[in-house]
Length: 276
Image (cartoon, rainbow, N blue to C red; front, side, top):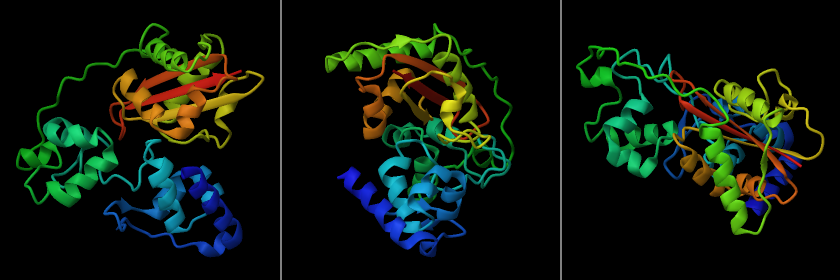
């Protein structure tokens, strides 16, 4: 069904072209209650615009079917510095998830979903959007920041490789070999890049595959917000496109990148680079 919807949306864009533009200038509440800013989504996801155009309905269709699972934001966060609110009205998703585990148990750590909960329920329930608001407008004492583990072949990356091969073994597929020379370093570079531009297009406008030099078939999975290898693998395996890469019998090698950026909206960034 998803493939049919995606194909249909591509066909409609081919017919309508640029005349279908209906992008909003600010987040609006869609029929299902989700806040969505088509102009923001189009600006930050040029790969989606290339396929779906700028029509609000088609952009939202992509977000619902693919974008949410890929960790794309439906609208801009309100904080001037994501993750570090400057006033009592800015929303801090990291604070909100930690403060209200009952909410994060349902919505996870997705900033967009947490913000949606606050806008639709949390505010009316008297929940705080950030630590400044909880302290009556006085910034809380600075917390001690624990440095994230450095990207290395013995950390999260290797755990993701093990989980990938465990999934492949369930379907009788050969395990993927770790590529420490090309895919591994390339994935590490990409993990840093998607912390600023969450897209399969690199910050310089080139394809994600220019980060590696492998010949043959290539594939990339990206994700953001998941705190552990198991969480990110669950997200990928529950997304048809990402799952297809993980279970592609043609691939033989894998590189994994993990990057932690404490001041970013998602914090945790993950990349898988596949090669035949």
